Length: 186
Image (cartoon, rainbow, N blue to C red; front, side, top):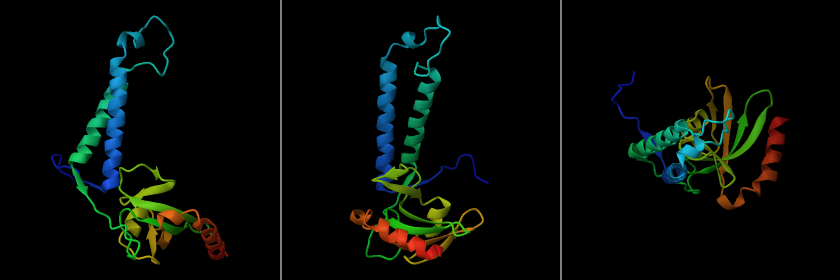
């Protein structure tokens, strides 16, 4: 059981920190825009229609809460320096990987993804990001290329770490990987 006064620690890499800072800046800009507009203009209650784009006190509060939450995450962050070393065979934060995911019943999917931290955006540079805190992320973190790991709530799925992907050759791999998926499905 967790103590109420215990602070939650967030693991972030540099990209995660930058992503949160960008989100805070975007939210502050949005909040500033809303607060600079005349509230009376949006709170006009003479009409029966309520337009979803109209000002809402609840919306302002939700933005303020989100900013506060993101600042708390930064204040309680432990910065992880992933190696992202293509020469290393060990999977680390920041690595772009090619995986074969086996969901059973010959349902195999090829995926190229970046292992990131929980607060990074979900897609970056056309590459999906999975958190090191997710089931798949936990399963592949610190594993060697070539390893087959189990993941999922009951470890019912398998993932094979094919290789670390060079940032410049992500698109070249599509044809090779699709051939690999076909061979493994047969």
